[in-house]
Figure 1 (cartoon, rainbow, N blue to C red):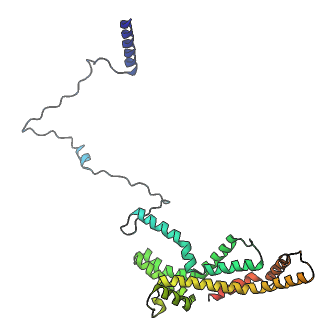
Figure 2 (tube, one colour):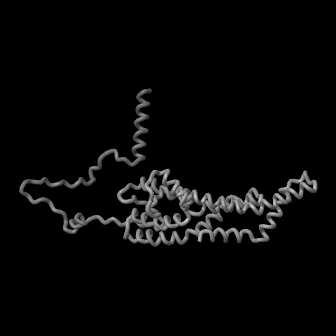
Figure 3 (cartoon, helix red, strand yellow):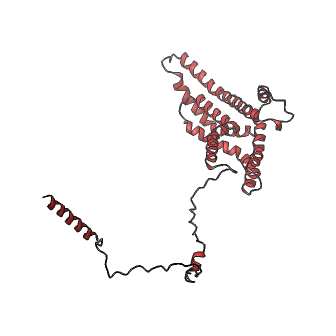
Length: 286
């Protein structure tokens, strides 16, 4: 039985080899590979045909890959690497909201609008998104001349390659510095000069940004609260009149806010309050 098993396995192996097309025996009529003549000393080396020789000496031409017009490539700043350049860009993007608050009138505008909403007795109308959007639009309107000046003095020469990135930053500081110096209070500047232990500057242009930035934002907060307090006065008078009248007639169960809020809205709409408020805010920046 063992011999039969071996024969069966051998027959199965032969069938597999025949089916795969592998030749089992060498064909006597098959041509033999050409013999390579031996190389002897003093004999000339075999040469290749002249038609094939130049093909070996020709440099390989690599066709340029097509450039995708939508492709974005980030190169390192100066001799820096690309990863560090990305880190710097992402860090700058996270600082944009802080720069918007500290170097523009955005803080003053937003504070005034929130005071107005509280004075009218409205909790969610207009919404926070609406007030922030309105503040951003007005901030862009006020800062557009400063941005145009920065573009002409620093960005255009940088794009043309006439100045370096550091020189562009130094040139762009001057318009922003002039804008903040125009609205900062001397009292706030003196406070932060003393806190920073810096020598007293001879001219406003000698102030460092370390002193100018907090002094400017503090001045903007004070002005915003002053305008908000003035806005509260007429609406506060309406609240006091309504409260005294409702108490004198015996309407103790009816909250005065229910009556005063429609009256304040009616007064604000009749005098075209938004037009007066926005116009006064814009004129305060000269």
